Length: 238
Image (cartoon, rainbow, N blue to C red; front, side):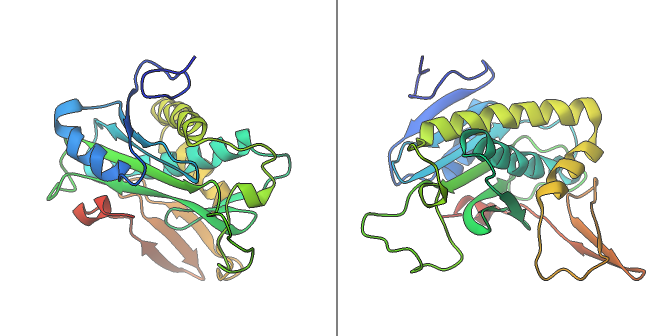
């Protein structure tokens, strides 16, 4: 049975807020975060895309709390795999692009309170996702190279934004629970297992810095950090 807001059944932690097509779920969740708190789930009901954002209340400083971004990205990939056809190739490109059969199909975003200090526990974080379910009517394959939709990648039945949002939320909660139980190493393992970079040199070792959420690349003794830094402008991600 759908819950309030039109979503399929969700764990009681989540309090869904349905938004009209064209709204910005991440910006709405950011605006509601101080008053509504953890579990607030803003989502957009639209035929062609899924879009949602969830408010979290971390119990650790901002730096390590950024791993919530990686949990959210892995959760989106897991949701697409669970609802998709067999043999679907679902990957991630740094920092938060979702690839389906090597075509860009969605993304993850992270927002934090403006001016939040790295070493302080933020009052809230918001993780958001957006996913292309179908291209507009009249779209011809190949006119937007490198991008795809679920419809073009063999989803025999139309998966709704509500279904995708609910699946993402469930996988997100499972990932957060696993992080708490097994620590940041498991978050890194699951995220890196889906991370691809066609330009990456052979022999490069990859990891996540548990103190900052940065991607760490190491090759021939040289180490490079690719930071993941939420900023207020991330709320305007569309």
